[in-house]
Length: 120
Picture 1 (tube, rainbow, N blue to C red):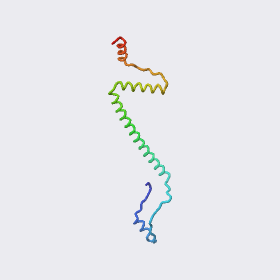
Picture 2 (cartoon, one colour):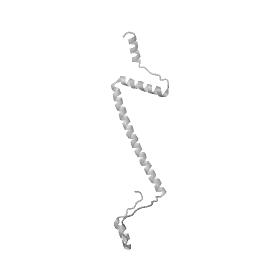
Picture 3 (cartoon, helix red, strand yellow):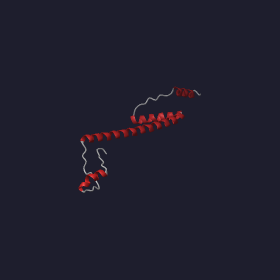
Picture 4 (cartoon, one colour):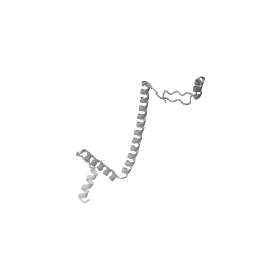
């Protein structure tokens, strides 16, 4: 505790024995802390809370990056899966924003469509 003084029992007994008093227990009823010390304690508590919040945020970022890494590894195995995820993202954006989306098609996809129409 800040500002506490612990007195060993022997010292307390030697100070009170001369009057015939035996101290069995000491209880603190009211403690008044100076305003400057209150501010210092509050600043220390706030710094501690901020430090814990930063640790929690960093752990969340770490977990998110691990999940993204796993997702990218899964999508890397299937180009079609990546394309489907892209289309799903576009669908979500269109539903939320109610806007026009310009959808780029890869040139090789257009060429393959042209070959199929020609009978290839």
